[in-house]
Each structure stands twice: as C-alpha cells, then as structure tokens.
Length: 353
Image: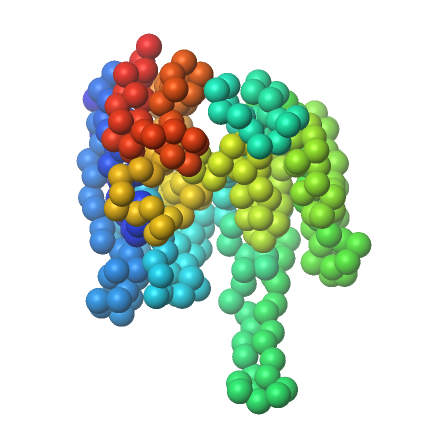
C-alpha cells in the first residue's frame, strides 16, 4: 500500500470545516486504491497570529519540507490585515518551495446552473495557469513620506525570462494533453515594459510547441470573453495578478467560488506542492456547518493526481459530478439546505460507483 504524508493546515474559518470533509473522501477513495494518508496537522492561522504574533513558527517551512504535499483549508480573519495573513503564510510557502505554477481548473457541472446564460455543462471546461511567485506580487518597493501630503507608495513588478518561460512551457505542455489551445492574458498596449516582454516570450515558446494553437487577449477583453464565450477556452496562462483575477471570475462563471479548487505546484518536485481551495475563510458562515466542501474535495483530487493516483482522482471528480447531476443535495451557497456533513455523506455514497 502506498502511504503519503500530508501536512494539514486547516487555517481559519471554514477551512476547519472543509478540510475534514476532504480528508474523509481521500481516505475512502484511498482505501479502494491501496493508498493511505498520514496527516500531520499544523495550527498556522490568523488565530495563531493573534496569540503568538506570527502566522507560523520561524522553522515552519522546515517542518513541512519533507511531506509529500501540503493541504491548506483557508486563511483570513477579521482583525488581521490580509497582507499579514498572506505574506506570513501562503507566499513564503509558495516562494521558498518554488511553487511557481498556480493551477485552477474550471468546469460547468450538469445540475449546477451557471449565472452566465451561455455557459453550459459539457461545453465549459478549461484551466487557468497562473504564474505564482513573481510578476506584480514582488516584494520590491516601499513607502515614503508617510502622513505628509506628498506621501507615496511604489510597487515594482518583476518579470524574469526564467520565471515567465517556465510557466509558459508548463501551460503549453498541459495544453498538448487537452485540446491543444493556449490563450495568453496580456495588457501590452498599456503596460509598456513587462507585458511586451511577456508577449515576446509567449511567441518564442509557442514556436517551440507547433502542435499547440495559441493566441493572446488583453485582460479587459479577456474578462468580457470569459462571460460572453467561456466555452472557447482550454488553457489560459497569465501573470500573477492577471491569473488571480481571471480564475476567480471563471469560478463565478462556473456557478460559485465555493466549488473552485487550486494547486500551487513545484513541477520539478524538489519541494512539496500545496493544495488549497479558492474560496477563502468565509468568516460570515464559519462555525455554522454549512460550508460547501466541493472546492476542498476537488482540490484533494488534484492532490491525488499530483501524487500519482490519476484513477483515484478521477473517481473523486466523478463523485462530485454525480451528486450535482443525480441528486438535489446542495449547500446554501448553491441554493440548497444541506450541511457540510450531509453533502460530504452524499459524495461518499458515490465514490467508486
């Protein structure tokens, strides 16, 4: 039996509710496929920050470096500024473990109506590949003359040939295993240095992948086309900021941010990759037992796939599709009355069918 050691970081809010749900599904499908999981739980969170002054301990990265994967629930809590929670936990993990690919698949499921009239099941299924460690989210910059009329803030974007090339190669390679089509998000008509550089590298890498069709769209037009013609897309690749915004928009097109999964991938596997649903900590519903577990369960399927268990991952995704297509079990965010627990039970009933 294969055994995987997983670092669990439930985090804040509904993270503590959806992570146990996802682990229950992992254990069930693992038992069917000869895979077991050993979970080491860490209390890294905003609650820890408020009590101890840091999101995680100084040696936190060393504590999880040897795990096969990191499974994160959610981060964020009222009273803790978002930049503190993000830069105190997620970004150090992403950067120190060279998780330069953020992968966010999108799908319109049968039985879950999209708010977009033209987004139909079986037609909309694409993935956003987001550059995850540089771009607009660099640490270069600062504040000057705080409190004075001439106060200013400077934030520098950083686009390196190595950083852009590797995420583009990942996107083109991924497209080859799908429908063979890449769309690059840009804004080179208005951002004069970094995005023309990005465009040049897209053309360069595209020429090395002649079996993959590609084009590019300015980010404003691309947002509109996500709504007007979402079935068009296969693999969408963008910078850190563009990929972040596009993937949340795409999740909304698919029916809700609560269903959206994500993975922070180190493709070389020199370090553990980190898996986290997109939805965040949702403090408005935390503790009520009504959080939608789909995002976390689909994220667990992505983790299974990364760990080499594609068949098990496919079963998990099939169980999500079956619950939505064949039952009326829905959590409140999807218009139903199911609890996290009852929705998870429904998923477990379909695992392996």
